[in-house]
Length: 570
Image 1: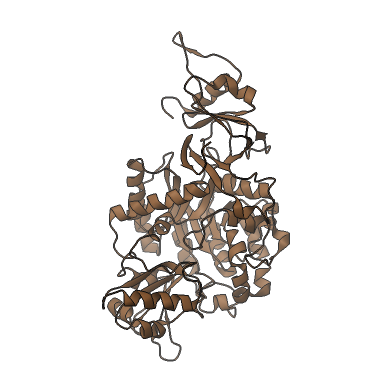
Image 2: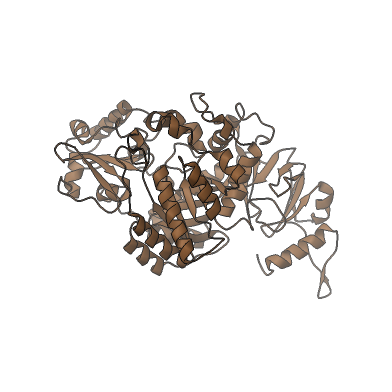
């Protein structure tokens, strides 16, 4: 922050709060605030759950928090003073799991739009592809964005796509990102037939009788065999990637996220794209990056080549591994393989291979994050973290498990004991429970995202929305899933796992900041922390979550004391 250190700033701020006039070299020191909020309902999310009515910002940091009398001496001739009129302010939300580059890509004009609500059924999907064929030259690609919401058993296979698109290669990716479906033309262009081996951690799903590929490609590496040839999914310019980031961040700021953790940066090119946006001063949202690795060789190569980034706006944190796929793809790795969500599941790696990769990354001082849906996948991730910690103990490692949908009781205790952070998506409770019950069954659903249990155990929790793998980016759905456990169809799953709005807000701010080692600089409105805040349409602590959450929206989003989104002039 300009010429003074954070420690110096805290001293100056404390002095100003006491009404002191500071002097430097015989001259009066100007410690007036840059920005002041007055007459508000400021939920600070500090350790005492303090509610204030005024705050001051200086050089992008919180200078003081309290009442109007405390703040008045900091108002100078050039201070911007905003009267909140009783409106509620919280710390900026920190999204612990989103895919910014991929989300920004979805609005690229060359895609056939297969996202909800344009596509909500198989009939919709077939109709949209048929319409695209009518407008596309023979031999040209029909590539959908990410994507449709059908389970593997409900989606069209290659032969059904052949019937409506015999002369065009087709690539359609599921919304969850865990599988894609392609037609015969696309398979031929990619050179995939019944003798093509599965790529590392991926699966070419085949007919059980003939061995022929069905057109379903499980997990990222198998999808890439065709996707790398498809427009929008294959080669993109550096400017394309930068544009994707800028588009996505504006959507994030508009719903109240001031920080995000992109936990599956696809390659070092994506990291460079973030750096270029940052260097161009176009990065308005703080980002923390974790890059995906797919094999031991890939992990070793990337770790050795990685360049650490640590700035106020952009940080490179570590590496992401996937232990399993998803329920819709049938690749959630459960011990009970009779479940529909686990019917074509398989371990992406042998346990010793996972242990090897994690130990290498852990010993180099990086954070490691694991995609885990099923209970067996969760246990494999815990085993790998435990092995790495035995090789090099570290009580502050903050390795993360993403999603953690169906943990066992034993797994939760091990997570607590090992200090593992859980980054989960309570929006899936509100959005997807009605679908999950059909593929997971009642026993597994009784363990589905057990928030209150984890909170009471003292497990470190973080919240993220996981776009574009979910249809909506708004945090309203996360609050609804965490606080009410109520679905679109008004069903309630495990109501005993509901938590309070205050707890949900704390997890979505301080909890997610902890997940990226940044809880000392953001996540609450406190002296010396970054001035990242949201002014809301409703008071989060008094609204009726079953009635008012649908209308909750940010009026202004502030990053480093600058208004970066404004729906209503303050």
